[in-house]
Image 1 (cartoon, rainbow, N blue to C red):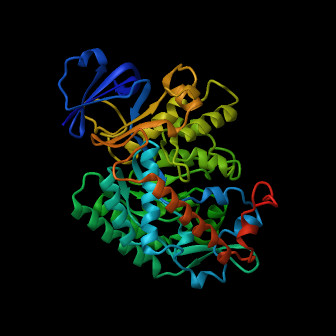
Image 2 (cartoon, one colour):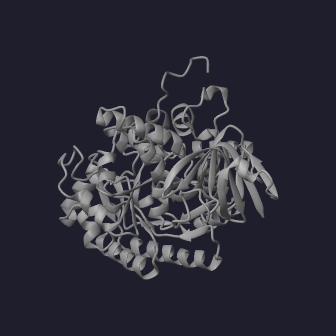
Image 3 (cartoon, rainbow, N blue to C red):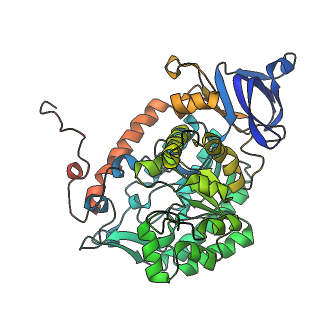
Length: 491
């Protein structure tokens, strides 16, 4: 099937770099881009479908490698610090009686809600992330098999696998952060993850790729990490591992394993081109460590591992990366993750740009181009998929488009600058994967968004209520999550 996509601006790819093409057109045949150029070149072309997006900017499909597949968490926990933040973790009392907050059917609904959100925000490729605090331990095969089926049904490109871990964080009776191991849980979870890899292979679906997604590094014992590294090499599958993320993580690993988290990754054989690390903030250059370069960046760069930068989430938790320009200058591959709700890469780029300007104290060092490259080319490199992240002949027809026509967007200067400064990913008008339209003008075939919104709200309220039973201070839901202002006496 041949399609012609036209718009006032296209971010095309020429001579190994992104370029801005005014009044451009993209000719798609089946799942591939076959030609890109000015609209005048395609005046007489015969196609099965024409998609005229008008005053919009068409971009390579956005790649989110830390994509939330939960209802939410940040709206609740990004306001807490000190003792309050500890209340959102398992208590020692709750640990042995942990439970699934959602039924199996509800958990499937949670994943479907999240995937629809990704499509609505212009994300074409994703790697999922969800909080284990709402489960009895980690993620399971059946839920992910259902999620894979739904993902393929609506047409997203997923790099997926259930999480697993050997240990879970908790708060002891004295209010201290601790990590407790249940040793057999790690190998059991890894076995389920390998079974899922086999399941994905059996589907032979080009939109689904199995990956290994262990939980945070402090919850995986070194022997299990070695086994993950062995399986990754044997089967040539990617591994994403949350690491270099927090000061407590670093201190705990040094205390228990006598190496830094980065040294542990190297020691167990994981630090290499198949490894993708969300955050990558707490290394030697961070002010809370040494505040100077002692070789960590060079080690990451030379290994070929990728860092997933989650600028919006980092800013909301007040824990920024130092400094993105230094990571890039040393050759570290940077990709983008949203990590929380909303899955809005455009807002994330905007926040990252403003932080870059503040950190460098130079308005010219806004790094807009670098951020946009990370959301496209960087993600494609991390996935070992050179056919993604670019609009050029021969690439997969994974395409996102954002309207610039809304009056509230103001006048258009450079299309990307206008989108990032004046818009959000809610301006998405097209999400296309492998030549198939997933979302057009806020609609997804077969999805009742009103019904899904009502279901999502009920699931969120169920999730929020469950925090109280885990709180080591035994506070109520109202005490854990007070309103910004007191509720009216007339409510």
